[in-house]
Length: 228
Image 1 (cartoon, one colour):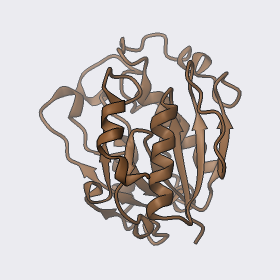
Image 2: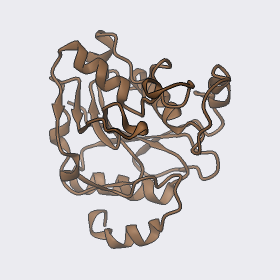
Image 3: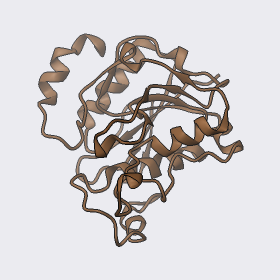
Image 4: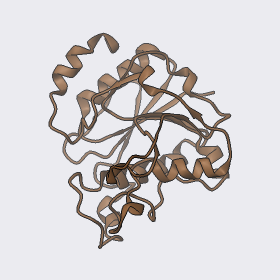
């Protein structure tokens, strides 16, 4: 199986480059694609990496996309969950045989070959829902997961559902579907095989590196051994 990895990039070029180097250090036969949604700090180029440039909305125009939801709730991170889910849905077409999705603010700590499993709809970590309004619905964490896009498409399963996407609609807890929530529920409803794994065994995560004010330089220095 071809080991395709796709990183959805947003204004974190230094972090994304370290992420890629950590992938290649532990799983050198991975093919890496960066889907660049940046609006200020594009990824640029890197030897051996395929870059898909969406920095001007060439493929997914998010301004036009959001215009279809004029009554959406205010969002401090500009509806990042909906945009991210919409992007992952687009990747289904680019990688019809499946891909490992990862965030740009993680570092891989060991070989990820075991995640590529075409017997399953997905391989990743299921986070259960909680009493917190933001986390009411369970979800497949999008930080690092295998998605069998071919099997999903064959069974009518999408990653993005505009009726179940965080902050696109006003309302009660039933509207709070964070990234990976509607996808998880549809996968489980299908009855097809999935694998719930502890992704902390495979990676470390800065969390929110693309939009929170964090000392990412110190974090990269602390974990330099994972990517150099």
